[in-house]
Amino acid sequence: MCAVTNDNGADVDYCVSAPPSGEDSAVDLIGELLAKVKTNLILAHDEDDGLLRGNILAALGYAESYQKRSYKNEPLPATTEQAIIMLASHFFESRDGSTGGFFADYVGGAKQTWDAVNRLLLLEKRWEV
Image (cartoon, rainbow, N blue to C red; front, side, top):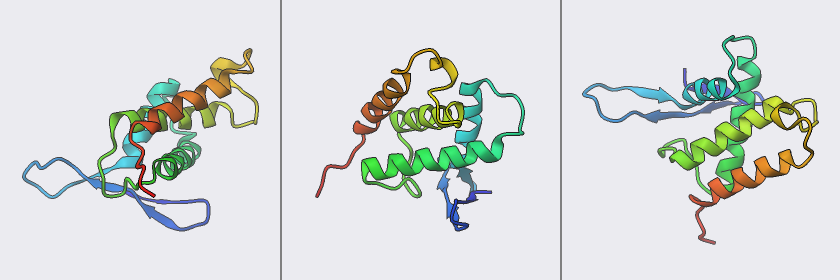
């Protein structure tokens, strides 16, 4: 399933075409990112998948807005994918509003995460006006 419901109740379609393999197939971008975010967070259960999907949609939306592009019909560059994984993981670890997670004892950790994400996203930003 490639359609995901956003916070406003609207279905958002994030299917992208897979590399040609002789058959008509689509890749569920959100599903692929979910697996990678769970690996990044070292999560083996499915109990938080709904929350993680929301975090991924928010991170993907941020990336698209920052880069002034859409990944609904474009391949996701590796740098952008890493930024989305980092940001979705940060959202999950900081869901109570604190710095949370790995950076719980370092207040500047959240800023470092955002700085790294923005630098990665900058590499694929469209600069036209």
